[in-house]
Length: 203
Image (cartoon, rainbow, N blue to C red; front, side, top):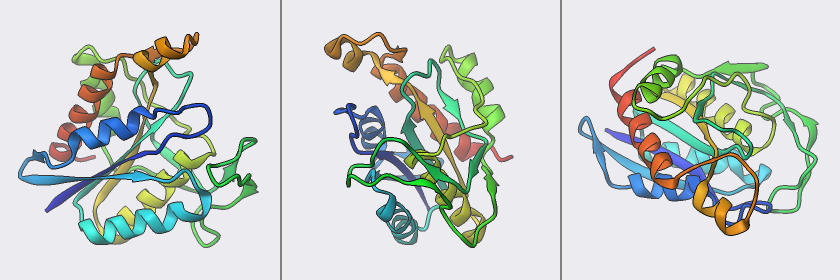
């Protein structure tokens, strides 16, 4: 049995993506006897579906959790639903802009995570990690990744979902930005606890 976690490569002005660091910190660890495999996704609309489905086929996971950067958010925000919609004013890393198209033309309008996201939020907060439930993963690559993950989870019988995180404070300090953030150590702890909790709790 295995657990698959994924984050994203750097994109736009975010030349260091905390989610890449987070998932690499989990690579090779074991939770409940299940070994963690980590993948770093491209910020590329045309490749995202294929990369996730191939990673799932290779890992044959019981659990998949994606982590994405939501600059401007102040808390860890597990996502409840992904919408079948792609739209962004800014280009992906391939220079491509997408305006109002479906992620999967044959799929439903929305897909709910089958992870215990409400319980995860409460558990993170009990541990002093600020968290809240999110009902919108946006319409950029994170939402697309979540939609594909949950679609595959429902089709193949594993549990899957997505967690957004703020910028990490160390990067904010280097860039001298006035953007909400959390220390990288807190994000690493949140990633570990998210996997531990979702591996041992069901909806």
